[in-house]
Length: 223
Ligand code: C5P
Image (cartoon, rainbow, N blue to C red):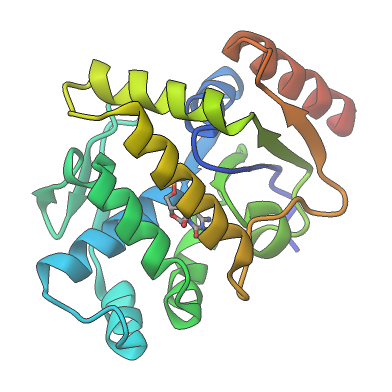
């Protein structure tokens, strides 16, 4: 067991986890693990390599050999084997591929150690689906962040349009429902709150309010 603090933030797509995890990490000067990006990168890499996603061994082998680099924290630039895939991984195809490779047990196992390596001093904020349940079960603070699906679809729509990526609300709502279903129903590392997680519903809260609540809870845990 490590005594380096971890704040695990899990929850469904569009709950605001990504933005909130980054803000909490910045405020505390902690390292950030965007575990969804790892699944997105693996999905895109498998797609580029024309792998059949049914071939679990091949996908897991690929997961072990990927060279991934997160550049200049905050800019969101991600390199896959030296190639900038930052935009590709954020498309709806990237989301769908991530959720498909995420349901492969061998691929999750292959990404396990890689995620543990992010736990470095002075601390880590880890964002995902199974951070508090599987990857960092001894996390100092576990947050399960939710919001109603219509609000999550709205947020995702705005995010994509702001980035100049085409999207429609009905398509996003359908994709979110489908991803929620796949993430919650898969047998391995399903999306669910850890028993000791604090459940925060962000539907009616601003990003800043959620960040403040998490910082307060963390301060209380650490004192
Ligand atoms: O968090 P984000 O939306 O980027 O994650 C994309 C997909 O990757 C999720 O829908 C989920 O299927 C998968 N994922 C996962 N486990 C994680 C993080 C993401 O299975 N820890």
